[in-house]
Length: 76
Image 1: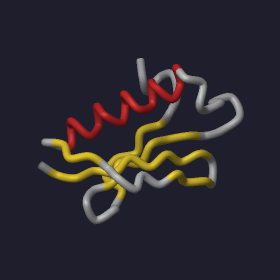
Image 2: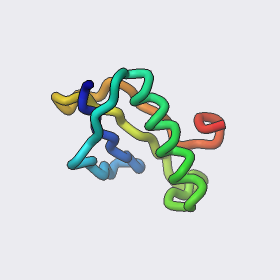
Image 3: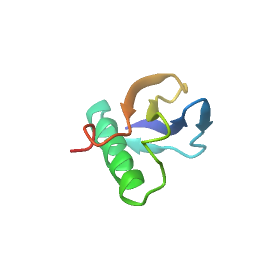
Image 4: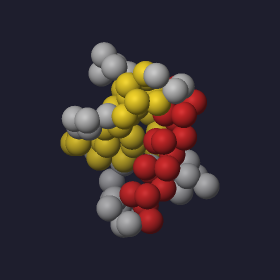
């Protein structure tokens, strides 16, 4: 199991995931990020008409390994 962190970036602001989660693969981390993006949209947490937003998936060294845009096309 690898440890991944899911930071949310809105424009120039970064909301850092301090806890992270242990997952079995990078593919599972990708799916987790897609689920997070969909949840942010459903809950209205991010106004994608006014902000550029994405989720940065980071490995245990806090290096970005995947960037998932938070928009309607990414989570369909």
